[in-house]
Length: 333
Ligand code: PBG
Image (cartoon, rainbow, N blue to C red; front, top):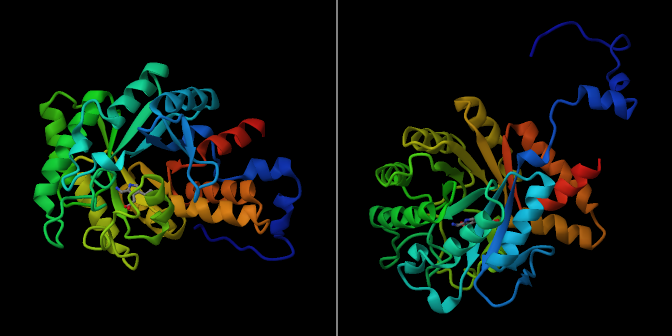
C-alpha cells in the first residue's frame, strides 16, 4: 500500500461513491458469467428433474436434462459445468466400483453434455463417496481409510472420466499423492491435455450437509472425514497442501468451502500466483436460500455480494449452484 498524506477534509472518501457511474469507474473487481462454473447434480433415475429439498432451486438432473442445462449455460456465457452424481443406492458397494463404469451415470452425463455443447468445459469430481455404501471418499478398512489403496481406485476413476470426455479432473478426496498418480496415469494413457483442478485446501466442513443429501451419501456416511479433510483451524497447512499438489502437476487449486475460507483463497493466490478456484458449497447456498425464503435476507443481493467477494479475495473462478441465476442477473445489468 503506497503511503501518501491523506486527511479530511481534503480527502473525502465519499466523493467517489456519489453516483453509480463513478462507482463503476473505480470498481476494483468484477464478476462475469465467464468466471462461473455451474455445479450440477445428475442422477440415474427415470425423472428428468427431482428437486433437492435442502437446496431450493437445485434439481437432480437426468443426463438429458443436464445436456439441456448445458445449452442454457452456453447461452448465458457460463464456460464450464461441474457434475456430481447421485446414483441408485443398489449400485453402491464398499469399493465404490460403479465409479469406474464406462457406461455409468458420470460417463453418460459427460457424453450427453458434450454432444449437446461440444465447447463447454466439463469438470468431474474424483472421490468415491457418491459410489460407496459407507459414504467415504476412499476405501474403508475397519475404521481406517487406506491412502495408497484408495489412490489406485481414484486413478481408475479419473481414467474413466478422461476417456468419457471430461476436460478437467478434480480430485476432491484429499488422499496424499493422488494428484501425481492421476497425472502420470493420464499422461501414460495419452490424456496429457486433460487438466487437473486439485482440491488442495478442502476442509472437514459442516457446510457440505445439503450436498450429501443431494447425492444421497448423508445417510450412508459412517463417522466423519476428519482423517483426510483438513481441520478448519489450519491455514499454513493449506499452503503445504497447495505446494504439494502443484509439485505433483495440479493446473489449478481449489479452496473449499468458500465464504468462511476467503483467507485461504487470498493466501494461496498470493503465495503461488496460480489459478485459484473457490467452491461456494451446498451449505452456503442453502443458508442464503433459507434466509431469503423467510424474508430475512435479500437472496439475489447476498448471493451476488458473496460471489463478488470471492473475486476480491483473489479467486479466478467460482463453482456455484447459483451460477445460472447469477449469470441471468449479470446479463440483465
Ligand atoms: C466429496 C465432495 C463433497 C462435496 C463435493 N465433493 C462433500 C464431502 O466432502 O463430503 C461438497 C460439495 C458441496 O457441499 O456443495 N467428494
